[in-house]
Image 1 (cartoon, rainbow, N blue to C red):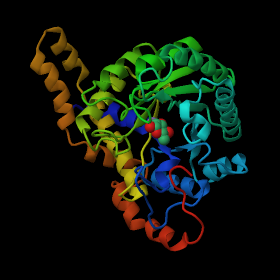
Image 2 (cartoon, helix red, strand yellow; image 1 turned 60 degrees about the horizontal axis):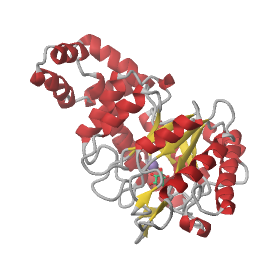
Image 3 (cartoon, helix red, strand yellow; image 1 turned 120 degrees about the vertical axis):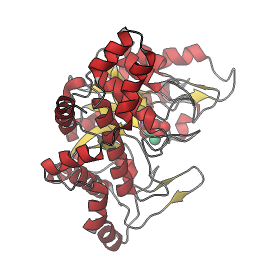
Image 4 (tube, rainbow, N blue to C red; image 1 turned 30 degrees about the horizontal axis):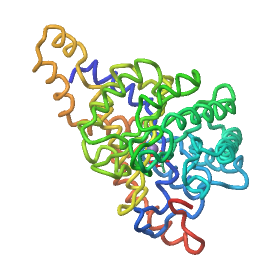
Length: 390
Ligand code: RM4
Ligand code: MN
């Protein structure tokens, strides 16, 4: 790697941030079983303490996404102040449209106006939480869909959705954004109402400039070229955020970069190529994961490091050589420019980055040595552990 590439990579890496999900620090599981772990956070304050540990050792995770109502507290100002004391801040506020009996046939798309109004009102509550915490991103994952052909009118559902989204959008203050996620299946299996990036983008375009698409890496059919979607959304200025994770088949909550590190590298390559790594690019790099069978804080540290490593490799692509090879039709040289960067061991570079800011070169080992895990297992007794869905 040339000195120039190295220097630029270090500068870009020093600015990168990755947002952590509060739900990664509560107990979680499958729809069959939630597994408990010793020392798991019992409330949103403790979840933020755990997230702050990830930031303390990695230096690149200064924000925590909250989920309403899982993270409801009496005083959100106090929660934001608690975060600030620990050196982190509140990131995106995630709404919940999937845990209420009223939502059996949908929420923002429900045939009944009463239910749609209730789902819209929930977003007013989320916007209040944003005002109290200084959050600027309202994240909406729509779990609506149908299970059987003919169950409901597909087009009418889109029309109701467009109308409901407009009302949610109208709740935003200037400077706030609506992040609209898509998912190709689950919880419904015949048709989801926002199954793909195209549907999400159409709704965002109709809403206005403050609406952007969230790309959850787990929400695609196997074999989907995700980096193409990243490129296309960046091209039209509507990639608002990532939900990073990994999936093999049906689940999407595994550690980012664990299933296919080359895919994560290809995604980050499109980000770097479009100069979208800059903090002011408008792309929020968030994790959306649960750690069901592995310890949670180390799981989040590993995830952050995986994103950082893929980013470092993408920054090391020799773009001049790549462009020259592409223009001259040298297929193998062009592909080689990517694979050379991917094959680089970036761990020494990242170690150097960390040491330059006083961090341990190995955040994972440093956390293990810190005794924090043993301390929370000892101290967090009594009360009810936070868990997915509560
Ligand atoms: C969805 C989606 C959302 C997450 C929920 C719990 O599949 O990924 O981002 O908030 O799960
Ligand atoms: Mn997600």
